[in-house]
Length: 105
Image (cartoon, rainbow, N blue to C red; front, side, top):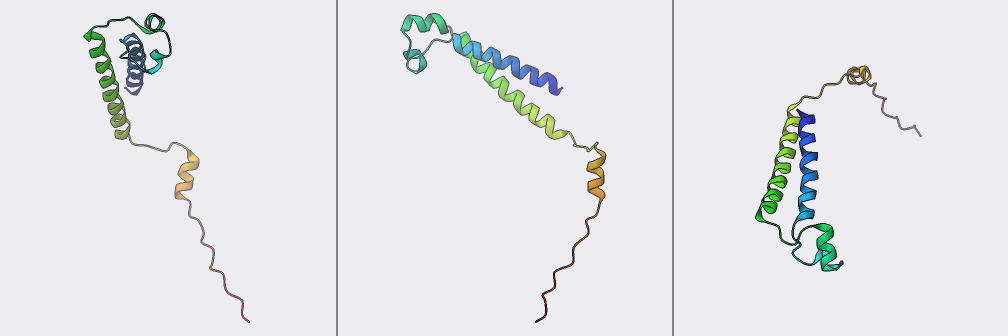
């Protein structure tokens, strides 16, 4: 289950990156550094529909939900120690050293 959730998060993240690069730049940012035609050809088309924006919001919300589900999935599991050394350290008692005595004058 955990592997499936992580795989979906990775796939949705890659698709989200592609969708963000395809979107129409609103001005400013890194696209202002390039010429307007070069930035449009390199990072996406001039006019994108509402579908791309809706898909961007959908993938970002899906990633958020999957991360929260992954967090609740992990918090529901109980940690068990399988190491022999951890079990021995948990049961071993540590002797307490006696308090130092001040020397008599």
